[in-house]
Image (cartoon, rainbow, N blue to C red):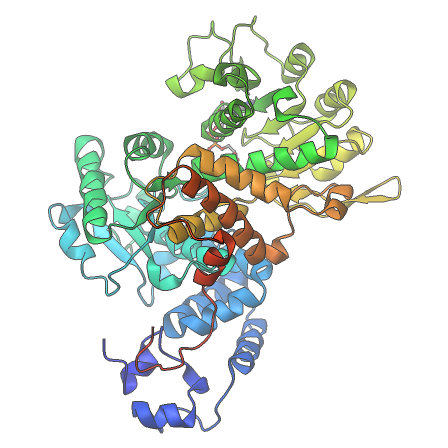
Length: 544
Ligand code: NAD
């Protein structure tokens, strides 16, 4: 790769912009291409903040940051890592949703790889065009179930790009090891098909054997070209996400954050809650409002965590009950899918959620129904009547879908609820005491998982790693935060938190013999030594 002359300014990895020193400008043959002053990275970060402040909307800021990433990667990450909690909503949810919807209108510079299903038979050849040869981490989507926005076709590429930026900004996964991938299999979104600016295959989604064969070819191509690579599946429709995970999960290094990361962050909240209530996991009983992918994924991970604490997995599953749009999931129901059956227990039918609470006496309720306001006053009061510290987790996103607000949960439980939600809520004052609600954001889990996998060259990502991640996140909540009701660590220190979580995950990877490298004496130091730091290369003509 030519990194001298004008190419040094065009390569985002070597470009320093106004921070090239006089000596570097001479050595690279770029004197005269830049204004006179030699800036420091700090001054450049300040200038980016000035430019961002001048922009009116979050989508404009997203676009500006995307352009910066393609122009000067070091400065992009230096800006993000200067305040990750503030930049997360700009490079990922919620702003990335609009970016996916606007992708075809505002497409500018390219990033990552696009693999259309029409290129079947040539996937490996196309993937081999990527300039980096040591890829360790791919986030891939087919754009079918983008956030809560449904089928965005090729515009779904915003998700792998944004998510990988968080792997780097929040856990230090070096960007040169990452690759965003879009598998273009068409779209069933008629608006996109009718849009003359649409950038993807103008056809309905390919399904069935042809789709499966394409996924298979893609997985094989990645393994052959990048043997140390982990594949993270993202925002596939459930009817593809679950079988893909079943097909490849036990065989290669792969995971699905929508399913496993979500479950782990909920479990982290439960471990945090148990630090407040001083109870055991195996003494808990959970009732889920919702019986879909999120509910079954969380219920299964809780059951496996209970099994690790010494009870049979069947007993763990028996402590997790689901309640969906047709009532309590009981074994006599004839409308259940296979993935729900482990959580359909012997019990007479129950049609009302509050009746189910009275019958089952759960210690916690978890809302993953997508329907707002169903954790109403009778529901919360029933939980508070049974439990000294009821666990109340309304996890449905966005805020407008939350099963209750933080204020409602605290008010209706006399301030005794241990609360966390999928979307953020501000602090609440009850009887003069400030209570701080937590947000079960997957960002506590997936960047750390990526860093652990990278640092150990793990061959698989079993469920146990997600339990280890959940425990590590909960262990990092300070006593002061717990005293204020907060059960997740503050997002402002996400990098340090992720490196600690990655270390704990890596320990399990080594213990289970899943690592591709010998166990280092100090796993934490090893993980930290690999973490990306946004600093300009000392020798831009020959970057590391
Ligand atoms: P899904 O569509 O697979 O499942 C929804 C379930 O809710 C179904 O079982 C349905 O029967 C049930 N339901 C619908 N209306 C109901 C009603 N009136 N009463 C009882 N049950 C009802 O969806 P999913 O993928 O499981 O996601 C559910 C929610 O969880 C979404 O809002 C999503 O945003 C949220 N979620 C949050 C996080 C997070 O915050 N980390 C992660 C993943 C999912």
